[in-house]
Length: 268
Ligand code: UTP
Image 1 (cartoon, rainbow, N blue to C red):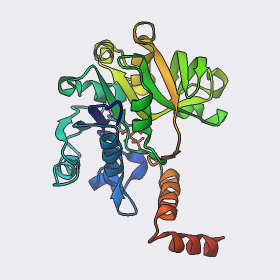
Image 2 (image 1 turned 120 degrees about the vertical axis):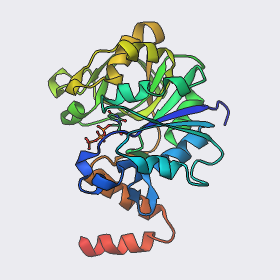
Image 3 (image 1 turned 90 degrees about the horizontal axis):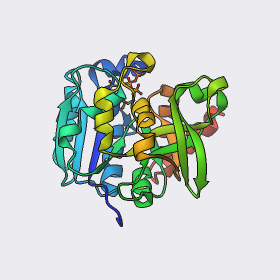
Image 4 (image 1 turned 90 degrees about the vertical axis):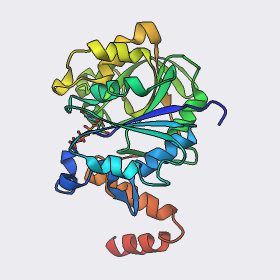
């Protein structure tokens, strides 16, 4: 790794309501794609980006997270911290809960329910592409216009290769108000200056403290860049995305590709 990213934060305190009843007793992030939990994919991606310090923002209702990450071998040789978010006040608030455990000037964030397959993981690509202590860097991809209301969306200014400097970012805009179709997906490299912003951030969309609003507030000071990553993203926070990810993963696997091809043929 040319440019390792030492600390990675995993906000995993959400309630996973779209996956009930499974999530009544099992954290969404421990749901498996075949036999591998979403969280395990995320941990491996962080380690491939050079992470040594992993911070999990969990909740009292999800003791399975602490159990899982404490198991031998799960987090490689990383230093692991699990913090409980006292209330589900949103992604921005979850990231703020990591403040005391981030020792470097910049840190990664992975949302495990955005699963990204590719020859190089998304966070390692971003870690290599980043400028040290440069603008906040967020993974983006093009989405259909009617889907902008499900994402943070950037207002692009200037494109250079895979990087798009942004002059604004809005949370879940109506398609008619969307500044572009470049949606933020669950990978970020943030400067610790974001913590000051989050600490004073008012509640936004859905009554939650939004990371998007803090990024918007920090644009003049820190800057914001979207990064078009290589790879395929699956939104495993909803059942359709999880199904697609499962099929894609089975296809990559020598022991399962024949089975999945046969099943899909039979179903066609
Ligand atoms: P989501 O909104 O996708 O997760 O949050 P959710 O709330 O679990 O999903 P549903 O809508 O109820 O099915 C994106 C990420 O932010 C984390 C979630 O765990 C997920 O990784 N999150 C969200 C927190 O850690 N804390 C929060 O207060 C909210």
